[in-house]
Length: 142
Image 1 (cartoon, one colour):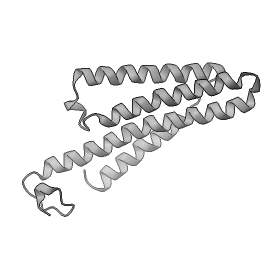
Image 2 (image 1 turned 30 degrees about the vertical axis):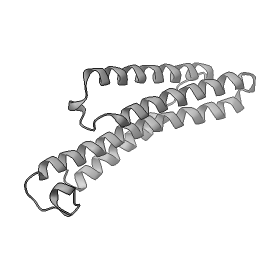
Image 3 (image 1 turned 90 degrees about the vertical axis):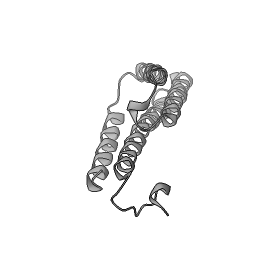
Image 4 (image 1 turned 120 degrees about the vertical axis):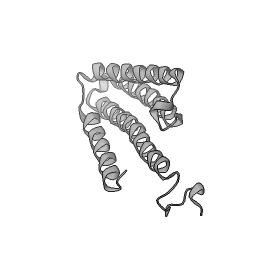
């Protein structure tokens, strides 16, 4: 496979720095939307278990949990369609991403209100995701 075709065993040469940047951007981007997905599952599970703890509000809690899932998943899927290099994203794409993030956060806040408090679990696992991305980049010298 030639260097232009993206061989894993490429020599140091023309285009190599672009390939390294692409690998860094792709991994960072994968971490970005993994964190969105992490948040989605944390809130879905909170809703499911919250419905068991508060059976009198079970329907409303499950619906709020579903709303978080729908908003977070749309946010994640849009993010996954963006260029991996944030510097190449259009103003319009950044605006859509920001709006989807705001809607996802509003759905999370609604569920938090129903359950009577916030959680830090999504922040904990998102910090783990950031750590894993950084460790891989460092290990591979990217």
